[in-house]
Length: 431
Image (cartoon, rainbow, N blue to C red; front, side, top):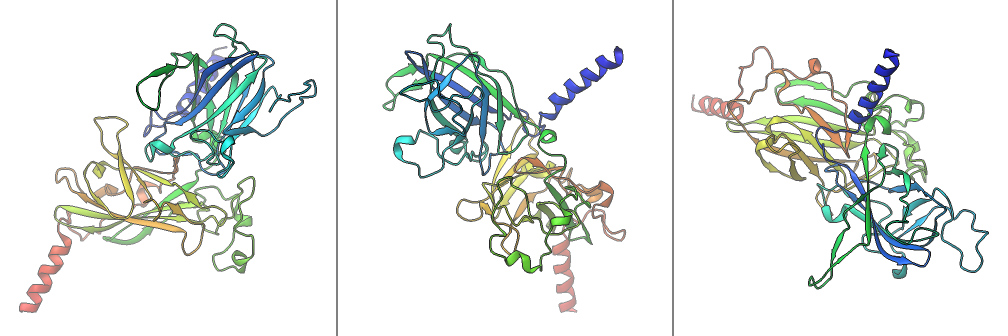
């Protein structure tokens, strides 16, 4: 009996830990239902999905939301979204509902739909930005008219068993909970109105549930060591090795080879790590008061480009970033007293789209950081990141004992290496 109880406790603790991200402890997707009016047989609700995750967005082909009705409710109509199936509505005469399924599945509309089908913050193909990247685009919403339901706060039964794909698995949603009614401000900002009833559903993400293997890896190099530490072998699993394509293969020039499949099955370039994404961190230069890092993100998937990509990095010297040259940068402060995490993302209309594998399938930038002379060192891999996330997925780092190390003949502290070289050249010229 003790063994059974211990196993159950371990499973419960693991499930909670799996959905907890130490770099984004408060990150979640909150789905809010606001009842805005009652109808003769139900209600009209505005459903708003807010992505409060700092560096994890919902990419193409977008979100899919599902739930189970508590009674025999039907969806009469929707604006800004649609269900994927209508279900059996044969018992209805005259007006036929939009959906009669007990477990409806809802998706966002595509851009360009007629205006009479649009709703605020809708029609983006289900793509939702990360809150830390663009709060104004981190929201998706639609309006739904429900029938055969309760017509008051006391008779409405909340939907249950919510599911969210974003776009794949990984999200776990809690039960719907009634919360204080949402207050709205009229366009002229002179009057406040209130929802008749409001309930929230909170969904959290777990990389353990989303995939068996990581989706990205990290390689390392430095100016003080010729050794390049590659991504670990089979870092992302080698199950796609049989179908991979060599970079010089004629197959990559075939018509349609870059077209994504419905199941998002990747077509990867053959590499030893077999990851769709590699992040390379290169310690480039060392000055007296500053040091410089080059970061390059390379796409090895021929069937996927990444819009609104994000790169989150944890390193103790990110508390003193002087300049980022061709990425946008925002510090992340999950714990206000610790500033060691930052998010990099593409500049709009410049490099916010990471193209599919090939000559243009990479983005790169350089970062200038100011030293703290009390903590800065090149010893023991201090100059390399502690954690790296791409699009919210934690990347696999090489083992620490494989990091580039200082040569034995090098000074313990290479504080002003370029200045030293310059001085030596001047002395030789004078001599």
